[in-house]
Structures are given as C-alpha cells and as structure tokens.
Image 1: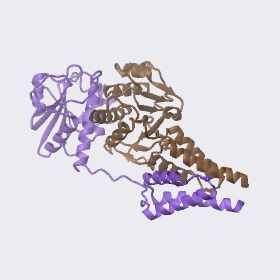
Image 2: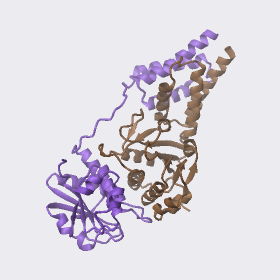
Image 3: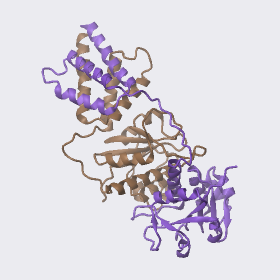
Image 4: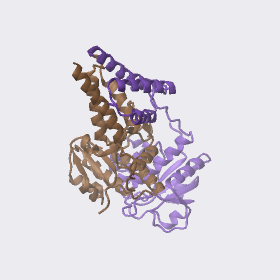
Length: 247
Length: 247
C-alpha cells in the first residue's frame, strides 16, 4: 500500500464521468493519488474507467462525498481553481505559487485543491471556504481549458515542486509546533463568530455577507493554529456568557 | 488575421484524429495557433473537430505535410518530446527550459516543438533532427501522458514564459485592495482588544501576557488592512456598548 497522499484533488459536482477518468489519469501521470468527488453526477461509471486508461486504482480509491464540508474534513489548507474573470475577493495564486504552498503545507497535514463543475466552476460559497484561488493563465480569448487539462497543469506543477523539494515522500509532522487548525475547526470558528455578531446585533439590518466574508478571509489568511482558535472562541464564549447574564 | 506564430507545434504521425483535436484545444487555451501535422493517419476528420471544442480555427489553418523535413522548413531551432527512458544522445531540456529557449529563440525566427506518435513517440532519426529533447517529469510508474496532455503541459510552459517575457500583456488583476494597516493602527487595535478582554474578565486573574502575545502574533501575521481593523474594532465597540447598557 502507498501511504495516503496529504494532497487531495477535489472535484466538485462533475457532470461527465469521462472527465473524472481523465482527471484520474492526469493525476496519476504526475504521481498524485488521492481523489475526492463531491456529488458527482454519475460515478462509478464505465466511461470513467475507460478514460482513466490504467489509472483505475485512483478511481477505486476515490472518496465520494455529498458535500464540500465532508471533502475538506481534516484539511488545514485549501485552494480553489477559478476562471480568470471570476470576481471573488480571495488571494490569488499562480499555479506555481499554488503548488509551492500546497506542497509546503502538506508536510503539516492534509491540504486540498478544488476543481469546480465543467461549465460553471465553483460557486461563490464554495470558494469562500478556500484560503485562496488559483487560475491558470489561459488565453483570454479562449479559456476553454477542460477539467482534465486543468488537473493536468496543476498536477504537473505540484510534481515539479515535489521533485524540487525532495518531498516526493511526504515527511512526518514535526512535534513541537501547534497543529494548524483544520478547515472544520475554522468553520466552527466562523459559525461562532456569526452567532456572536447576531447576538450583539452587529449588522443592524445590513446584509451580513460582506463583513462575514472579510472576517473569513482575514482569519484564513492568518493560518491559525488550534490554540489561537481556542483563544478567540474562548473570548467569544466568555462575552456571550456575560451578555446573557446581564440580559 | 492574427500574425503567424513563430512557434510551431508539430505532431508527427498521429494515429487518432481525436488527439489532433484535443491538441488543438490545448494549444489554443495557451494562446498558440500554429499546428503542423506530419503524415497524420486521418485528417481532416469530424472527430478532430468535435474534440477541438471551439479550436476549429487551428485545425483549419493547420498545415498538413508528408515529411518532417517539410514541417521544419524555415525553422532554426527544434526540440523533440520523448519519454524519460529514451536513450538518445541529445541535450535534455526540462519543459521549463524548453519553453524558455523556444520563446527566446522565436524572436529571431521560427522554432518547432515536436510530438511523436501515440504509442511509439518520435523515431531516432526524427529526434536527430532536433537540437534537444524535452521530457515531462512523469511518474515513472505510470508515464501514460497522452498526446494532448503533453501538448497541454508544454503549451502552458510556453505561455508562462511568454507572459514573463512580456511577449503578451497579461491583464492586471482586479482587487478590492485596501491600504495595509499602519503600525499605530495595529497598536490601537491591540489596546482596544486588551481593554475588551478586561471588560469581559477574560483573564480571570491569570496573567494576560501569553494570550495577548498570541493574539498580537495572530493579527500581525495576517497582515491586516484598514477595513479589517475597522470591522474588528467595530465589533468590539458594539459589544462594549451593549455590555455597558446592560450593566
């Protein structure tokens, strides 16, 4: 058995099983093995097997989940691929930077790279779950990079970075540092923060979206560890307790 | 009309017209347009059109020739892609080096990048026509990179080098950039946070130092902008106001 790769390739809402097969093939050519499928339209499917052309092991081990939350459980870093013109307020990574970050951070635990639906990509709330966006610098007049081609380019960049870092074998986690917060711990922090803001009526009837988005981005960017989450949530909880006593 | 690209993508002896279509698509996504086909088995062919997915213009302008000699006429530099284990006495280029050379030399005249047959690649005498060989650093246990995937990776590298050399003008990325917070704004945030923690009795008699230090580190690491400071301080102030009303 191979050790489980800490880099997850997450395909969200893929419509055509053939694309899943081609993506698996692209991954395998670059030495990636961990595929997670969020609500694929048809899977398993013989077309996926045909197009995987020998990367069937990746399809067999693929994890199929219903929600992005499940796909990201246990990850502490995630990047989402988008088209260039997509207007989202997220830090932008080139494929090379994305690969550098994914490889470096995968030493500390699981990381994820997300690919959206064939026609429509990732939805905004899906992108908001990510620490950043990646786009492949396509021809602006013809950005028709298909799913497997995008997986190919990014897997290739990841392979280059792994070869360069000598980290083809992911190294074990070092002991003394604090564990980075997982994505689900981050989500619980954000829910808590949302609840807190409602409780102090921070939005005062305005749409909470923008502010929530900005706070998400701030805390995701910071790369929090577990102890920091504990402090911030502790502060929120203590304040809530006090407010409730006083009310 | 576009000017003719000095970089030729030369497919030698391609068996499946679908691969020609997919290769054209891969080229076009990366802004390449000049395709030369040496003795393709079936071309033109509806399957090529189908798989080109909108890159039909590249197929229509493709030059079909009988021999590699014709394909290379007028070129002053050529590289041939090979599998890793291919034993040929030619200088080796990584995809990135290959792209750097092709882009640099294309300023002086036409250059070519050759891709061989699906199963067998380029023949030795074909490779001998080249100035060097390129191989994509695939997974040695599964080097099943298909033709279009190889074209995709190399076209992507060529695009990166063209973008970097300013041969294309990449468009500036939109941001909703804010001024980064100044050091004194950060300090005011930390004082405010300290005051807030006292007000909700967060420390409960313990020394506030450690927690304060950790929160400082967290927010400094995040590299906050002015708007984010405003949001966090706004949240603190609103909560304080509410607490004071209730007390």
